[in-house]
Length: 169
Image (cartoon, rainbow, N blue to C red; front, top):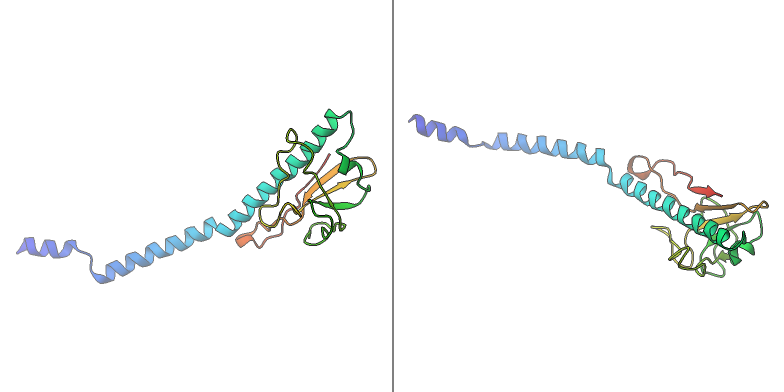
């Protein structure tokens, strides 16, 4: 008789099973909110943008060093103080760049050479070869600034204030 009572008690009853499912669901919801996948995705794309901006400006500086201080041709032809979007499009490059207003003509860096920049990077979310979603500026002193047009917010759910992704050298 005691053996039968012991076996009956070893099983979960329906109420215990429901309580266990509720507890697991509660902890799963807490973990999901702590991990916050949208925020992590936005942060990872912004990290890629920082890397792309760094690669572009480093390629331009390396080109300049290797060519006796002369800028790459399309950068040299830029009007100082004017922001341009990087890309191969001839016109329409003034749309879509929210971080900085750009002129309609793009600056094409695709011919700079494999030694400096294997491929011109595109924004991981919005960029294409026509409009990379990165901008460039040459100031009157010759300093070059490269930045990302559309960084994403890094707060909860990606709703926070976007960082300013720009480098000047």
